[in-house]
Length: 333
Image (cartoon, rainbow, N blue to C red):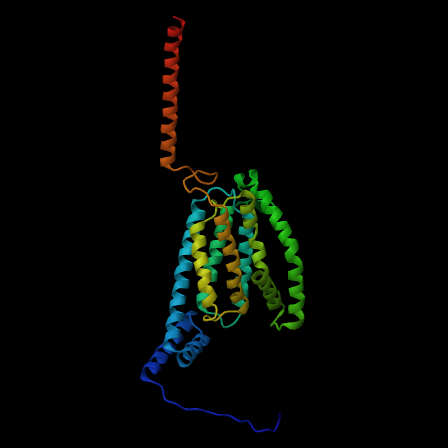
């Protein structure tokens, strides 16, 4: 109230030389990095608050989680790129999910850049993932540039069109879109009346990002539906999925230690549902790893064994034929 006295308590205390030297060095580095756009004043304040309010054990645990997060993200991205680089067939893979994932990554990147107090680790990870998603789209569909309007033509891979994968993909996207549309409209109306936004651009980006974070897992289900209809998971990049599943468990804990928007924190728990579903399908549709399938060529051992078995069958039939020719005249005698 106006005219009322303000009660303010100020506490003074000394700090250790180690704490002072660390803060001074970090401030010097932040001034140098601020010129290059690498660090912000908010990160310096976060670092000071961490040193003053947390114990050393919690800080070591937080550093270990951040290290695991970076390592698993690197290996997941590495194996995902290797899979799509070697993969020449879209049979069994959802091309629409790849395109939708790329659009969602663009929305998330715009939301992260529009937000404040975001760690540079999150920004760097989002940027790398956006580039990788754009490259996977070029592998999932064929992009052709023309001199006439519309200048760009998108074609699906031949094996994707000729197989049942495209039919299952469109069925899943159709019903998931019908389910998702009322949720997005309801969230947009709620955010317009109850949330605060800096501008109409921030409102649109916030609603789009909130829809991706909250209901985005619905758009990740076409691949699950394709696996269910094909009764197979051999076509999935399992090595990359395993690293992503490990990383999402680290994200569950690290999301409370790294400064990030709350909707981005919510997406970490959303991914757990999808990965557990994939693991269940891997258990339900497990097959012999040495058995050739439509997406995996037979191994040299299988080919050699099949060739030996064929030769043996031909030898047996030939020897049996010769025996029958000798037995025939003998019986007539």
